Length: 207
Ligand code: Z5A
Ligand code: MG
Image (cartoon, rainbow, N blue to C red; front, side, top):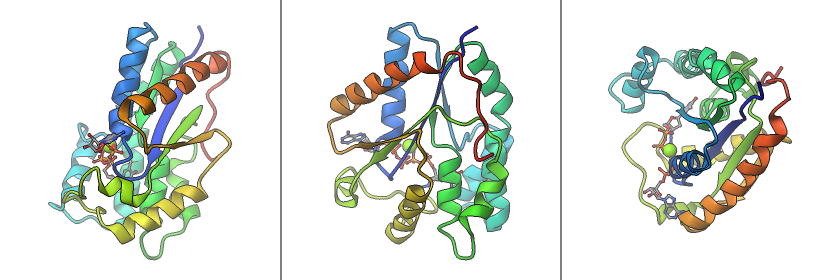
């Protein structure tokens, strides 16, 4: 059986990751390509609920511990992701381990190397679509909300970290476009990618 593609969205705050994931799922469904959407953190699981109460400032969790929880939240979904990929379903994933590393490594006393360790061995994406948006363009799309991490200085450190994580399978996309133009560009890239991975084994991240 041909496998599905593992497509990950990462990028700046307000760059349109969640909006474009939804558009892409709709496009693939229209074309009758098997597809399923994932989102990290997945706040529906028991671990995800702890992360949710941390992000919404209802609970403090020690920085190392919460990093491991974000990673555990990915690992708990891996068996389901693998079964779907191997059955030919393409997965559209809203944030992944790159967010995990970039956010924690923006905190005092954390190295990129330490932050990568818990996510070593996750299924490696076939394609990372990194949506780039200048801070002034992002600001026009609304202010930060009330969640932890939603501050300008911290987000600037996060962006620097993302750039240190770029790999050959990343595509950097200028996200300062209308929703429709961006959806058309991303749709074409993803439709071209899916057939190229069919017979490739699923690789391991950072191993
Ligand atoms: N985090 C972590 O620390 N460790 C981890 O391992 C992981 C995550 C996985 C919650 O993530 C936090 O968890 C996040 C990282 C951390 N902290 N921060 N900051 P989240 O995924 O739940 O975050 P979010 O609330 O979805 O925000 P976002 O991802 O930054 O936004 P977005 O998905 O990129 O954008 P959007 O929701 O699609 O669009 C934003 C707004 O812009 C909205 O009003 C849209 O209608 C509008 N929009 C969208 N596209 C356009 C275009 N093209 N033009 C104009 N306006 C647009
Ligand atoms: Mg989002």
